[in-house]
Every structure is written in structure tokens, then in C-alpha cells.
Image (tube, rainbow, N blue to C red):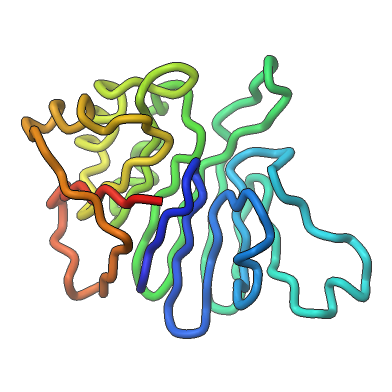
Length: 198
């Protein structure tokens, strides 16, 4: 699997010819994508409802909670609240793709309740927002990371990852253009932080 970061909370996961997009901000990457997962509804990009457009191979859109299976990719979405100020529903997702379990915490603004934490405990990779208002702060993000204990943490929605690293007694982290990973490479509960640059 190859993971790239496009900025904001926009990620692309690719395995072979199959791609998943998380929170895309434009339609440039739609070619080849089978699935688009949005952690906010209404989302930045919405599908064209025209029948002829759907038949041209547009990806399947998931915008809210529920359980889905698309071309062998399993997705479970759970609501984490409605933002009255922004008029948006926020959803976190568990995605199983290429045998790797991904926890995508989207635009998380509050700590998770224990039941949701329990559901995410066996995640291999976690996309974790933070950096302070309007999102959870670095200490809250680190607490969630330790509770879930994934192999890999990928920070998102940070202006600067420095304070998040301090929570793990790290001072520096080189950014990467992409992450290439296979299930066999993952070390359980390693809490490795990968900083992807857009």
C-alpha cells in the first residue's frame, strides 16, 4: 500500500490499481479511485447524481455512519457529533484495505468515548488530527494514540507537528513524500509517527 498526503485531511491510499481517497478537496484524483470517504458532511466534494456520470466510473461515496463493503474494502463509519457552528456532521471511520486496518479520526474536536476507543484498538494505522482549536490538542491526540496503540500514527490537520512530537519525547521528524507499507512490515503497538508532507 502507498499512502500520500494532499494537505488538510486529504489522503490517498493505493494498492495496485485500487485507490481510496479520504476527504478530497477536488476531483483531480478521482481517476482510478473506487471509494471516496468523507469525514465531514456536507463534504468539500460531492458526487454528481446524474446517471450518465455515475456510469462513467465515478467512485463510491461514503459521507456518514454505517457499514459498507466495496470491492472487498470494508468500511465502518461512526458519528462523532454534529458541529452546530459549522453545520457539519463529523464521522470517524475504520477501513480495512489490503489487509491493513486504518482508523481515520477525521476532524475530531473532542476526546473519544471508551466504546469508540475499544472499537479502534486493533488499528494498524491511525490518521490523527490535532494541533489545537478547532481540533483536539496535542496532549489529547497523544492520549488517544497511546490508548489505541497502532503500529503507525500519521498526523493530519497540524500547522506544526513539533508539539505533538514532544508528547512522545521526540524533537525532530523528517517528513516523507509517501509511505509504502505492507501488512507484514507493521509492528503491533509500535506507535511510529510518520509525517507526510503535502
